[in-house]
Length: 277
Image 1 (cartoon, rainbow, N blue to C red):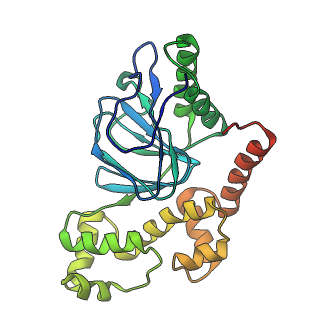
Image 2: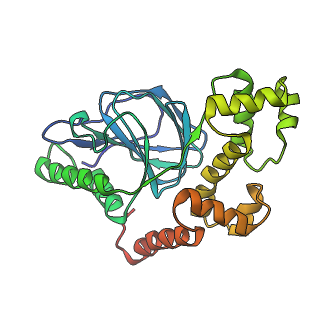
Image 3: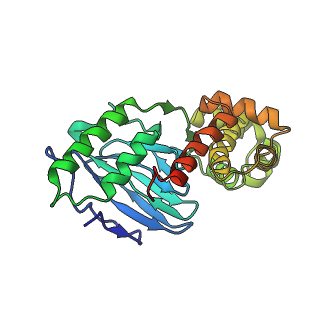
């Protein structure tokens, strides 16, 4: 029997916890937009990803927005929260702590290669109790592929100051807003100078730099859905498509067109029968 698919957000362990014999297992959930998993942690590491849909991950004072071709490594015992921004096929991998592919507690955004995606889909279809040898082999291949995954510096740091929290939450919900810091100072009841100082002290970024990070984090899901670049730039408050493209490449390591090409390869594989959903 394949891995069971849950359609709720209640906390539940994987059917088979990762072990020395099988160091990678899976919890599968099919969830609706705006559903979320409350802050939680577990003794194993986790590679959180969706085969379909877009996720928002919050952990260690930062937030990440992930389309299907990205995943995030969350180290053992790190508290995190997961929000579904679209209808989502959530397929997190549970990784034995002793076999963690990355050192330290930092979260890492990973490129999901075609091979890694296929391995994850294969793992979903297997029953560890009936096919332990094959499951163990897949687990080893997944760990090897994770270590080879390219990482991306995509992170939106989050504040602790109450006034800054209000401002940042509004911009995360409406990333295309072009309201000035002076405007937000009136909204949250603080001076413009105070807010500027808080951004530098708590987030290590200026207001403009932080807003740019938020916009670029939102860009990947829009492109993944095939939204035209001109529309993406407009929705995210950029003056032009070229300005958006330049900042996208600086942050994501590739141009939007290259991102499109990667997405097209996934779709082409599905159409040709190389990818079974």
